[in-house]
Length: 365
Image 1 (spheres, helix red, strand yellow):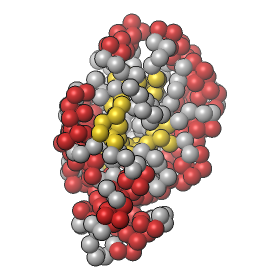
Image 2 (cartoon, helix red, strand yellow):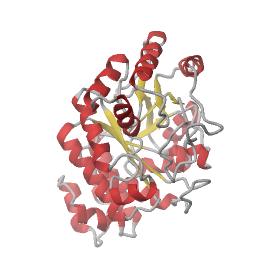
Image 3 (cartoon, one colour):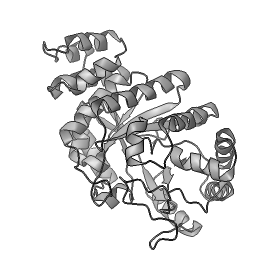
């Protein structure tokens, strides 16, 4: 669809000046972002996000990747109040997956054409850098063609601290052992007010950002995330987006942004699940604020496939991973799973062509 046609879909409203900025390619300010979150007409915001999406990706293609989550341990000492997945050290139900079980999970993924292992776990005090190096190198020796997208900043910071080495050494050693890229988990909301409330023992906002900065410096691309809807305000969300945008200006290492809502079921924090309206508004505003991010990924795991499909008109150009297995958000009552054929159907029914990609967002057969 021509860009001029997209422009005409926004009616005269109180965000006309923001719309003019978007169409002129002018960066939005903090105040612009807050105004958009307080703007009640989500259709107008969607039109702006869809315009940016088509400007960045002129072809009617929506990508996805065939991959699998592997949660190698659920032992974690930080006890985040929003998490229902972790088990404290020594607590019943805690585990560290043996290598053979990890190999089996990866083989099942490879057998259906999968290429990406998203491997994340808790902050386990028994696991130091040598354990991770051995795990990565052994996986790559058995599966040389897969992509290891692994270890969120929270894990990497803890590995660094417990191993008493620098972040640069931590990431360089893991890269040498086989790590290809770093997922953006654990960002939650990048304001210390929110982090102190929901995860007081975890890294600060600046520590999370610095981990990503160093990852980019040593040649590891990453993604970025936002978990909203716990105790955050609209102002917190906009501050989060601007901090990501600033770091992307500095390094250019983020490949994609993913937002999902807090899952309250069974958690210590409690509260309410954010609505689909809030999700669509949040990703649309993220698309127009994050002008230097190339890709925006759907969060159908938390929102369900139908909202994931609808999000393709709210700035999203990527449907994410087939997952095959998910243990973290499902522990908080979210159990959506979608096979490859259904992902392709959802994309096609929305008017796009589905294309498989790798972690670098390159097309694959």
